[in-house]
Amino acid sequence: MPKYIRWIGRTVLVVAILYLIIQAVGVLVFGPTWTQHYTKKDLIANYENRKSAIFAVKDYFASIVPPDKRVYIEFADSHTINRLDVSSVDLATQRGIGPSFTQWNLSTTSLQVDPILSALHWTQDTLTHLKHKLDLAFCISTCNREPCEIGFQRSGTGM
Image 1 (spheres, rainbow, N blue to C red):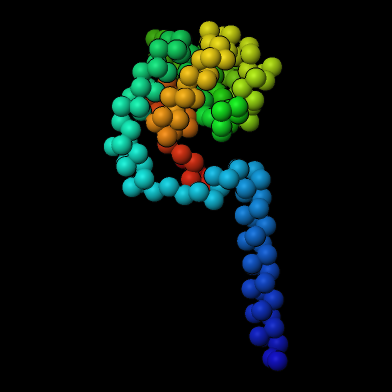
Image 2 (spheres, rainbow, N blue to C red):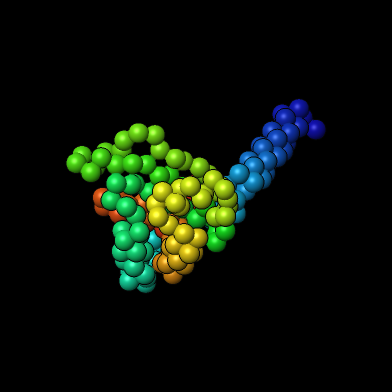
């Protein structure tokens, strides 16, 4: 067998092994959503089918976030916050001030979450209710920026 055929075979094998390693690491780091892919069409269909549930998330979130705070929260599941970012906001300029709290992969019952919930005047029931509303909207995150942001789903490593 010619050398170039063996070389091509080895190259294909190495590329296939690297691909499998990258996929395995992606699932370990980003969870099963690493392999899920949503399209713009899926996003539009979700909005059209769940418009009232999406607006209910927006309204509820606006009612629970203090006016001087900016909160981004993304749930991985009912017991895990994938990302929580809380910062203070200058009400006159709407710009963030001071340091912010940012954590990834927090248990909803984590000791790290308790002081943040307290600062926001939230309880565990607030988190549960918010997660439920996001589930009804088939969404995973929200942020009280202007305009309000509601995250549909993760698609690979993006949203």
